[in-house]
Length: 132
Image (cartoon, rainbow, N blue to C red; front, top):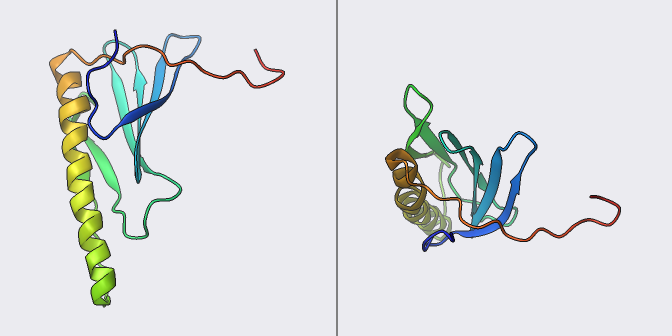
């Protein structure tokens, strides 16, 4: 079963290890979301892409006492005195982070908490020459 519309996210890799743990990577511009787990447990991590703009805020997954994801937090920071152009870049970065955080909440955390998250179909993986 293919996952429904994932908003700004595109699944770019998907593997299963020998213990049955699934690892998937979803890209959304400046952000990368990784999900690992089995049916009953999911670990999420948010990373920056290598070409993320300078003022892209870090984001973190907030979990409950059972380590189940409950929300996204956006790291704010003080850059000191900035030019108007740099200030616009900071504002854009924060607005984009809010948009991505909302998509993560709606498309990933909400379904995980409801118990109906679907990794979707495996995507084909290219084999590296000389590897099985």
